[in-house]
Image (cartoon, rainbow, N blue to C red; front, side, top):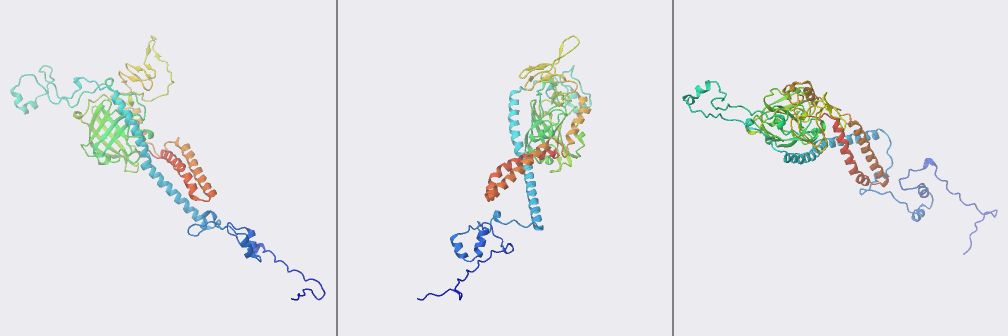
Amino acid sequence: MSEIDTSTSDGSTPAEPAAPAPPSRSDAIATPPGVTVTDTVASSSPGASAARASAPVAAPSLTRRGRLRKWDRPPPPHDWRWYVGNLGKTLIAMGILMFGFVAYQLWGTGIENARAQNKLENEFEELLAATPPVQFDDEFVIVDTPTNDAPATDDAADPDAAADEPALDGSDSGEVPVVDAPAAVPVEDQNIPLLENGEALARIEIPDIGVNDIVVAGIDTGDLKKGPGHFPDTPLPGQLGNAAIAGHRTTYGQPFHNVDKLQIGDDIVVTTLNGEFTYKVTGTQIVSPSDYQVISTSDPTKATITLVSCHPKWTAQQRIIISGELAPPESAPVGEPILNYGRPAEPVSTPDIALPAEDVDGQTTGGQASEGGSVTGNLATGDSVDAGDDVSGSLADPATNAFDQFDSDETTDGIADAFSDGWFSDPAANPHVGFWGLVVSAIAIGAYLLSRRTRRDWIGGLVGFIPFVVALYFFFQNVNRLLPPNL
């Protein structure tokens, strides 16, 4: 086979064809994630098919529906659609947080209340078991019918005539007069523990609406989280005067949720260390939050009770007041009143070791006991008793149990303070709200960054879910402190 002559007419070898110029920047095509610029250039040059076969390109991972995953997609343009979309996501997140806060108020606070009630129940049962019964004389027993040791007369056969005659004192004839109520047990003969706010005071039972809770001393926001609270500036249940108890209707176990369903004559049973006392409902009224006079004592010779809660439900615009009066035949002997649990009307801070006061004769006055000791005698204002002491004797003093103290300025001011709390009434909660808000934000950002690094949403959600819920719980708990207490 003859060779082909490739030389030119002048005998020189022809030049090689020029290589194609690389594409300019304006001709470059946007490359998808996972494809390099070299691959793009190679695909546009001659022999691209052979290059693809020798160097395969890794394709981006796709979802089951054949779509690019969120982390592999190119960033969207920041136009009006981007801003509207982010605004919608923010509003949805805020709505979810608000629903979560409502759920916390309805169920989360109930969990806190149940735990507190279980602890208070055990403490109160132990206190009842360790407290001796109240010792009272026959003069404290209710007399239902008169007795007459004198021989019967003709007048006894005529009840109308006997009714018109004046009552006898029984001094000569042996007749015992009829009384409407027993004489009040003196304060020194009652079981009155030295209480601090938030400690178990009594048990309240209202069978008609299913209430069975431990009542704590005090009506501060922290006290009412544990259960119904007793107004310290009112007498104790089972004493002469009006004992007032406040409780929540919608949160923290909602002990007074259905007090509006009570009818006249329904029972309110309160058990204290002095016995069991049954009150009969006498009426219901709706008052303004500032109308605190409704729980003041109007008749110091009667033992009454007042239940206070917010009205209507879910708001604190008004107060619902349930009034009741003691039924002596169904109750233990009523006692003389004492205010503020025998504590000074205006508590003051005292050092751990207090020096006893001395009078002009050099005699020590007052009493003092160390932890675990006991005190006997009259505890007057200014005496020092440490927590855990056993106290016997009189807790009475003119500042705590006198009937004229029902209308004192200290008492009415203390009652009014319980009705005056509103929004942001607990400024100490502000730093806690800020701290837990930062913790919640940090956990959310950390979960997002983890998902971005692993390119899997479920990994960040799985790792951050439990810490986020725990931090959010404490955030809601402190935000709730800034809301009105909703008596």
